[in-house]
Image: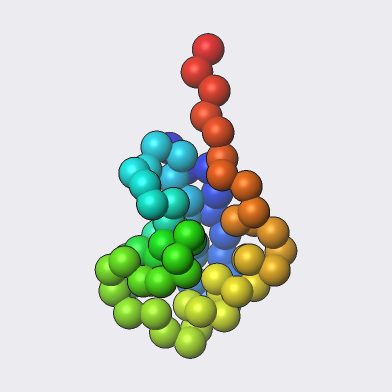
Length: 75
């Protein structure tokens, strides 16, 4: 289950609610995962951080989409 899916500059950034720590996003382009990116340390966990991906992540950060850790409610 994902809580956020955003497209910026040709890349798709996904934040999953059920994913493990540290808090991170998965970045895709053309249906392939390019990167797993740690939002706490602002570093690549897997893959290579390209300028295109960096710009997309910086744009989302400026928009405030990574400001709060999502919570999942189970009824």
